[in-house]
Image (tube, rainbow, N blue to C red; front, side, top):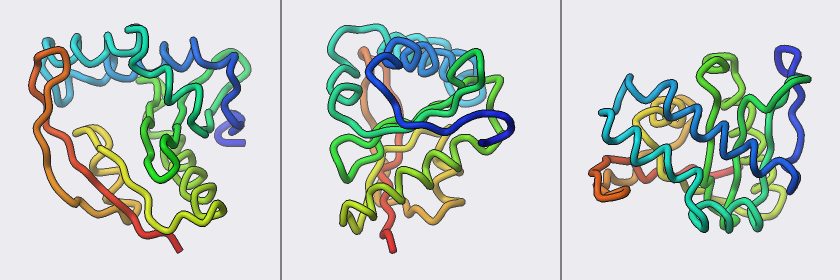
Length: 158
C-alpha cells in the first residue's frame, strides 16, 4: 500500500486505463517543460494504434491504483529497458513513481539483469538522477514532426 493505494502487476484489462494515465500525465503537467505543440504531439501517442501496443502486450509492469482508478504505472520493455513511467497530474509527488521504479529495478535484478536503461523526459530526468541513474547522452528526437530533447540514462543494478 502507498498512501491508501495498492501496488500491483499490470493485467491485460488495464491497458485502456494506462493510455488515459499516460495522456493525463502529459496534458496536466506538460506546461511545466513543454510547448502546447509538444504536449499535443506527445499525448496523442497514447491513442495511436500500434505505438504502445507491443510494450503493453509484452512488457512487464506495475501500477498504483486507488479504489476508483489507476494513478500511475511503469513498464519494462524490452527486458533491460524501463519504457514507460507515468503518473496522473493529481498524483504527482506522492512517491508513486519512486515506488514503481524501485519495483521495476527489483524485478530486473531478480531476472539477472545487471544494467537497466531508459529514455527520460524533462519530467522524469531529475527523478532518475535522484535514484542513482546516470545520464549517458542527450538526444534530440521528433514526435509527430515536433522536436524534443530527452536523456538516455542507465543504472547498474546490485
